[in-house]
Image (cartoon, rainbow, N blue to C red; front, side, top):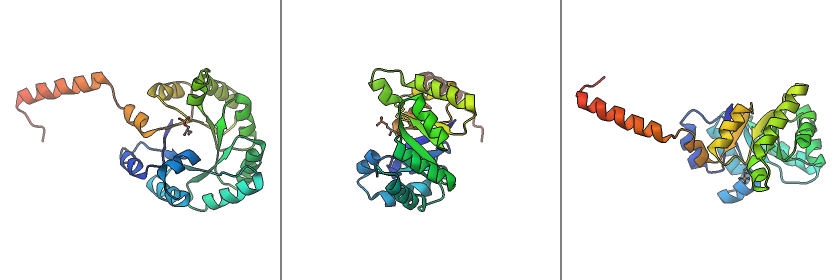
Length: 217
Ligand code: G3P
């Protein structure tokens, strides 16, 4: 399963990329606004920090303008993925980019039917927003299971990118349900490596090792 960072904070991204475990990055207009930087500049910097896919979102609401925006974004770097909303206009743009070999990520997915339309349109990634479904009183991860079943039934290649993931439990469940990728806020990515028993065990091992007075090197 691929792990993406959901961030426009390039300092944090550069630091976490050193783990060798960041497979890509996702952004959205809210995260661009949060960066306080010009979108094209920040996307270019991000695309240079990771080899994997970097999602950059179009903001128009009609297909024709979305296509123009997407073409401009895709020209930034070869690893750019054009992110488009789950509307009929967005899906028309997905079909255009799919026919032209440009990667797409269909965002704001909240149902299996929406995911079906995105796959039929040739989307590279579908982004179901699990945390926002949880906020809405549903169980967001149930949608991942449904989409996995639909895509497997018809052998769609569209990759399931679990978005709006807020907890390490979302990551575990995404892996158990066979999601292809999950995008994470940096803090959740950092939390993946943590377990109190790991800390306690390491502390005990190091204390016992110190008592031996030995050195491996
Ligand atoms: O990738 C989509 C994500 O940024 C949305 O997350 O926490 O705003 O629902 P959130």
